[in-house]
Each structure stands twice: as C-alpha cells, then as structure tokens.
Length: 466
Image 1 (cartoon, rainbow, N blue to C red):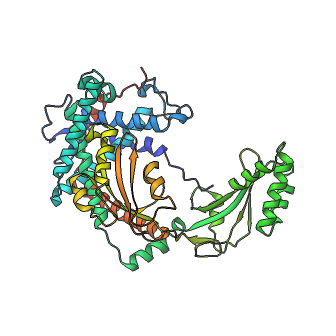
Image 2: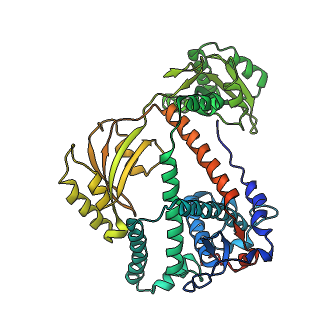
Image 3: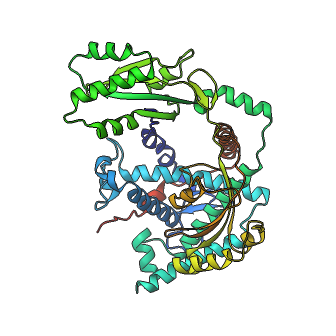
C-alpha cells in the first residue's frame, strides 16, 4: 500500500548532463595510463579519471548485476539480454544503453569528487585495501586458469573488449577509496539532541509507522459494499465483513483459505509514501483508530482499509514509533577470493573460531584478517544467511557463530548489546544521509568535473546471451 515509486524517467532527463558536453571540455585532462586498452577519459577531476575502458567495465558490471537481480521481470521491463542494449528502447526517446550509462555516470561523478575530497584530507588506501585489490585480480587469473582460458579472454567476454586487468585495478582503487572515505565521513558525524529532535519534527511522516487491515472486495454493488464496510466500528466487525465477502465471492473458500486471507489482510508498521492517497489519509492530522478508508481500484474492485490503534511507543492514536532495538555485531571475515575456495575460507574461519570464547578481543583478528563492527543492523541490509543468524530469537548477547555466504566467504559473528530503538535509528540514518548528501553537493561545487562527450561512442556494451 505504501509503495515508493522510483522516478525512472529522471534517467532520461539527466542523461543530458553527460551528453551535452562540448568537445573543448577535454582540454587539460591529465595523461592517461598507457597500460589500458582505451585510456581516453570520459570524465575526470584534477587527480582522478574514468576512462573509456573503466566506463565499459562499470557499465557491463552493472548490466550483468541488473539482469541477475531482475531475471524474473526482464520481459515486463522490455529488456532482452540476447539483443544489443543500443537496439532496445527504454523509453520513447532513449535506449537501455542510455539508461545504464546514466546510472553509472551519476554514481561515478560522485565517486570522483569524493576521491578528490579524500585526497585533500590526506585520506588514502590502506595496505590492506591494496592487498585486497591484488587478491581480487589474482582471483580472476585463477578463475581463467581453472576454465582453461586466458585472463584477457575471460575479462573481455564478461566486461567488454577494451577491458583488461589494469582497467579493473583502477576501477577497484577508485571505488574502494570513495567507499572508505564515505564510511569515514559517516562515522565521524555526531548530532546534538536539538538537531535530532528538529529533524524528527520536520520529517515525522517518514519516521512514524501505521498499522491497518485491508481487503479488495469484488462487488456488483459498489455503494452497498462501501456502506457495509464503513458501517464497521470495531476490528472484529471489519474482520467479519471481510470473511462474509470472501465467502460470497470466492468459490469453495474453506477455513484454511480464510485463515490465509486474514493473515495477508493485516499490515503492521507501514511507512508513509507521498504517492499514495491512502497514506495521506492514514497520516492525516486527527486520524483515529477503527476509521475506514475506501477506494475504487483500476481493476474495478473496492479497496477497504481500517486503521488500527498505535503500538509500541505511541505518537498519536494511530501513529507510533517503533521501539524494537536494532542489533550490533562484530565480525571477522574470511574471503573466498583470498582463500581460493569456499571450503578453504570456511576451514580457516573454523580454525580461528575454535580459539575464541565470549570474552575474546576481536580487534587484533579483524586487523589480521578482515571484518569490523556493524552497528544498527536491520533486516534487509545484509545477506539472508547473516540475517538468519543475527535475528534468530534464540541468539543472545555474546553468542558467536560461523556463517558462510555463498560466493563470498565465511564470517565469525558475535552479537553485541542491542542498539537504539528502531525509530531513533531511522531518524539518525535520515539525518546522516542528509548531512552526507549536502557534503557531496558541496564537493560538486568545489571540484571541477570535466566530461568528454566524444568518448561516449567508444564504450562497448556486451550482449549477455550470444
């Protein structure tokens, strides 16, 4: 009900910023790395650049990931991996190649200015970062050898004909620097109680939750259906009305069907969406519990919903603040790319795990291997395997476990004391995001970003299915 719709049409609009650059903008670029197959810069700041080869790698990496993550919906999206991207329409005016170029261009522009800010502050890649990048490159070499192909063939088949090891190394160095510096910034933020409360008051709808019962009724008499549901004054009456309509309109609706239906009708802890008339109704000032909303859907059904009273830390009669605590963990990470196989990474993790107890200091092991502390962990922010362990109700503070994530590696995880209530975490997260985004905007004002329109035509997207 509170679905947030991404304005994908912005992709088409924002492409203009990349394709409208004049040829003379290329003047003053720094000398490119001659080890790359195509070192012509597509975009650059004073000290960093994204070349045609790098842009090709980023484009094809994102394309592969997008197809993998949306495999079931490609037909609906109008994207065919067996056809060239530039031949497929994303919109009336733009192709899918345009869409992907916009997405990665916008991301890379941000990474370039963040890299400049990092350099000015003296923030650099650590030895561990460089070692990790080297290991990832070595991993590609080993994958190629295992498949009895050359590294060049494996890379160019997967990422484009102008991509080689040097290209990938430069891409990893840029993205790692930008990511590490971003994390450094975010971790340095602190806010006063006044800033925290002011932000909460200004963004109340984005933080508070709302619970309700909803049902889509099939009917030949809209007025009667609306009257039936709006006459309900309690939750029990509303539930009874849903069951009545379900029994009348669904053939052989047995007790099991009704039980499953009612389970789907309850929505707990929904968030606000600016694109929803129902959300505007739910969050309207003075909204009370057990009031009924009705709306005719595009399919001709009648959507009905009843507001439920506040739970947890109430804000109004129907709006509430989620006081469920977020989780904090510390972990030691054994990457599959370093230990060559999933089994070897798991074996090393088990070896270290057997030396630990509830009071062991993870800090030296995190430095020796990898890992760190994850604060304010919520569901949906990590892998399913890790979340299954962390959010298991039987898991107590101080418990340790081994978790293997497919194609990634194995983690030793220890659950620390819970963090702040969820509503405070989301408030803090939103305030942090605003502060970070404001900083990025200032970087675009501070550091000159030069774009090369002519280089765009030399980027070579792959066709995934030959």
